[in-house]
Length: 177
Image 1: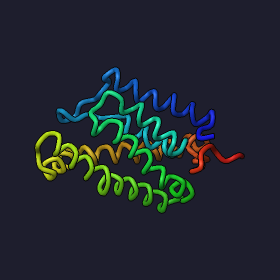
Image 2 (image 1 turned 60 degrees about the horizontal axis):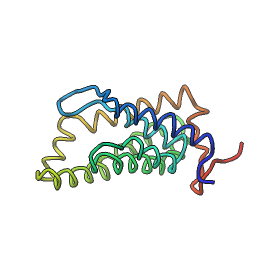
Image 3 (image 1 turned 180 degrees about the vertical axis):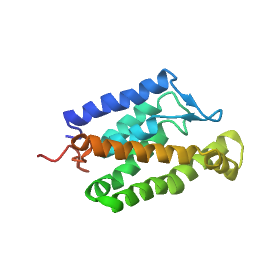
């Protein structure tokens, strides 16, 4: 069994919320054309609480209707990559938890998502890699997303620990209590 009933429910509820948010165009503009996007923290919540398979399915839901670069591939990669460290983040306490959480989210953006988006967008729009890199970091898009994700995941871990506890298994399904 790849997904349990709980994991399917998390995908339907949280992934559906991300899809509805995008489909209804409920964006909060900052510096045009950039927006505050709640799908960023939703992707990491799904990755931690329901695992990589749920994060991949939710990433597809949240990326529907967006560009082929920052749509489905972006949210699938974000969820999967955060799944790689979420169990370790959960097990740590105190400053070590915060350090690993911040470091892993920074690493995901700086070493994977940032370069991938900069390259793909530069090819599509005919700009240089460094132009896109400066756009993403210069107008605080990635820093804003990083802060948004860290704050939301810490609040969720604090106030909904049973929901956030990563019980999922890499082989699929969840651990039995």
